Image (cartoon, rainbow, N blue to C red; front, side):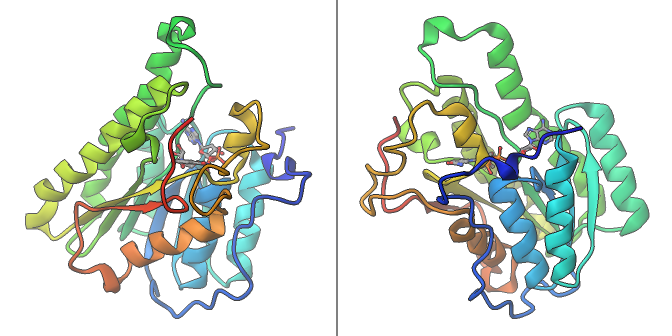
Length: 272
Ligand code: NAD
């Protein structure tokens, strides 16, 4: 039986997926959105916010059926549907399978959220294996490019692509070296793709989160006692504080924004 990562937090600090006070206003009514990594953390929060705004979602996830079903339950509570697409999104055969399923179920795709990402525990460069480097690059950026390319067959004028990069793309990180390099590549991908797809009127933007309480950081950081404390706001953020920016970028409110990255990091953050 797969293990649920949502059950990890014991300290009451995370993750807050959506605020009860968040009122949807049908900003994404009738939209269809695919969210990679939608089973957990930021992606889960995006799925639930999108549903509250009127969108149906499909979430791509790798492992935990429990977490995926939890997201599905939360989306259905908002009165929307949630397709579960299980498999490693960095594998070609899965990408093909996911897109076939979306084509069959929806026939079209309005919003692609490229959010799945991995990082290995912090380490010095001497200890980073070739295998780790390849896996991090393949998951975080290489497959993002090919999956985006292949998703375009289902997208038309007005569609949105939003990619999750990171504060580490800009600040670097002295112990998440390969990870930070992939995030820098994502930021450049966003700017480049935005230009390339402008003629088709498909808008491409990114979100660069700073320290956010999610299962990912619980798994890869040794000491979470200072997590986010070096930001001007002196705390880490919640998934519920990141997801509304994805709603904004996916909505008509962002009709004239492309090639941009929104930074959500408590003001600033010197990567550790
Ligand atoms: P998370 O681990 O809680 O969720 C990510 C999910 O992505 C996982 O549950 C997993 O199912 C899915 N995933 C990972 N690799 C996959 C693959 N190959 N195929 C299919 N699914 C896969 O992490 P999170 O913190 O919510 O991270 C989401 C994104 O935000 C990542 O790209 C991460 O790099 C980025 N980010 C997070 C933080 C932070 O502090 N949490 C900061 C900056 C950027």
